[in-house]
Image (cartoon, rainbow, N blue to C red; front, top):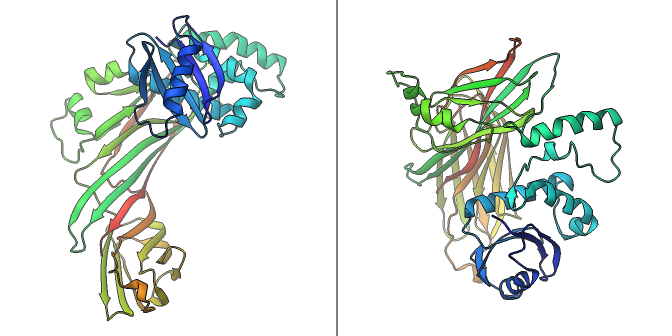
Length: 426
């Protein structure tokens, strides 16, 4: 397992050194520091010096380095280092840099002691750590301290470290958001060159006790696991990853997402869909060059959804860098030329479904000697937000909650599609 953890600044100075075993010395860290950090270019995140493996990641101006002499799981080590960065950010107000480390030496050492024991990673949950590791100057209620001292050991050593016992709410509610980002690259002839959706299921729970939740989607594997023969409307998800609360054994056996949720907000799962994407918008650009000093731009944007309304739609139309004057005409929204980015920006607050809006513009350019190079025609990009639309076709079929007191739960489900890299070549 991990023998030591180092925090090193960009100058190569060791800010923090915490040894968990005696098989990697500080001298080995000096060898890593001199040969790797002193070099101008080093690409491999894993290096071997004096028969010890060094894994390092960078956050702002601090390197986090883990050293070991054993043949450990590299992915586990990197996951621990990134989790450690999240822990420090949770304690330092979202910023983790050299100044934060220097101002909080005792707190950093205490966190390193709690997150790892004899080289084995322990709980890296910020909410759990804050129940018994208090920041300097934080007032501690004696009654709250007694509760924390009672519950913390059960959380750390128990099977459900992400949720404490004894949680009570007068109103039990679950909010579930399916947030999807649509990525598109379309040719100037209207052919889709690449499209996919990256999404995540975000939950916010206010539930009493230790409830067990069961979650179902219209994913092909999940529906086959339930023995459903009809697969119409099912989708095929790729690159699926789950929160640690999901029972992976049950998912492997019967394809059911079963979990005991943390209290509050968390990301339940992430996924990607690359087939049968419902593109929210279709862009039809026509750009004509009228000589060396004039340009004619016509752009049509059509909503390919119905019964919902798009919000904060922005179309960014690139123009040549020597643009001098732009005269846009549009029946919807506002269009303005921004010389800082050489873009004609068309903004619409609302975009109803099954509608089409058009923009036309006359562009005058200055004829300069240095502008002999042909214009590269960068793609048109879009920004948007469409509530209650799942571009991948994903649908939440059920969300069941089981708890021994059998209370009633109010469930809210919301879909939202946003832009990823939504590009149309011109």
